[in-house]
Image (cartoon, rainbow, N blue to C red; front, top):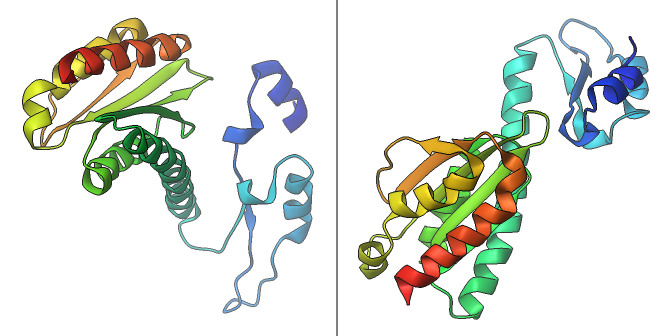
Length: 198
């Protein structure tokens, strides 16, 4: 079964697929496999077709994908956090498109707390598995006493059929098995925060 058929049969989204090709190795005198690169570029945008040499291509690919996810999550979350602050809100809730990359989601929540001084909850989903990852964070100040991070996350995870481990340092992360309910979960999280903070 060829690549295009697999996308159609399995309903894969090309915005979640990366391809690699041999990028060459000057020391070994090996040229890049430009033919493979050009074939992949017929199906995927250049940012999703990655060159690699002879050393640890999978580990390097994971690192590059994680960097791209974090950059994308920071851009979106920062925009929503700045809007929340300009509107005088004590919290920010948004959704980013980084799949189930809990590390990227957790990092942007920490950044909002650090840079903006407000509580934050960030959602991301994976359409293929219908799962969602959620991270909530509350700054260590007066707000924390009013808005408990574990209670807030528990409320948001309910529509997602989710669960989480104990948070620490004002952060808590969880996953849900019904990503189709993310909008409802975000609405519920906003209502919960408004009640606690007003």
